[in-house]
Image (tube, rainbow, N blue to C red; front, side, top):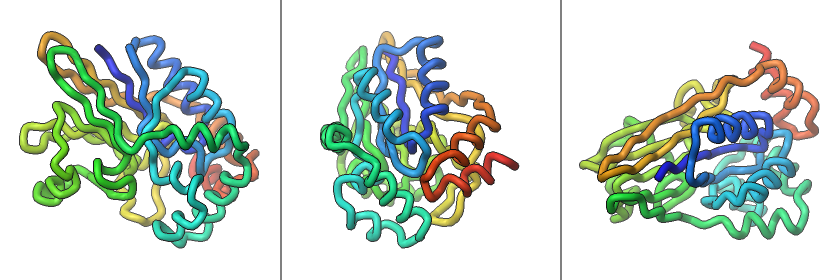
Length: 243
């Protein structure tokens, strides 16, 4: 069984299509999205439509929750450009798109071959707003996992790829499809890289294989898509892709 994990798409259709093409080429039995599908990017409608088209199960990310609860974004950040971009995205969405987001789940458990298991979430199993990174102290990780265990535990949120062992468990972050960061931003302005990221988890004959993948993208196409959008974050993204 081979599971492809995509996360933090953030309305970037160009990146999503490139990742789906790579998954089709390399093969996967199932694709699961770990959240943050539509906001901050130029193509919220198209990204949500594509997820629905492929029948992709989705975890509820913090930005997905921001679509359903207009006041929630301000408990997470007061950064004007982020708040404006989230509000812009919410204003674009149709009733059927809100209904689709309401199907997103806080966590998803996936049984794997050979008795292995996969637990999927956005930030941590207990919160879609927590940052779990390579340097998070083990005792803090124990708190974040809130007693949940699986052979592999995977979440996104930080936009930074990670593969870490924690007390015998494998912790995975597939990175970001739509806005991968050069390093952990910790709330500060990030450097966005011009590729797309995802991960695969494969279980076979009692063994588990985890791979972090990167897919090259056309920097000019990324810049043009961002610059051509009415999303308030568009000019800033276009400037990142121009360097």
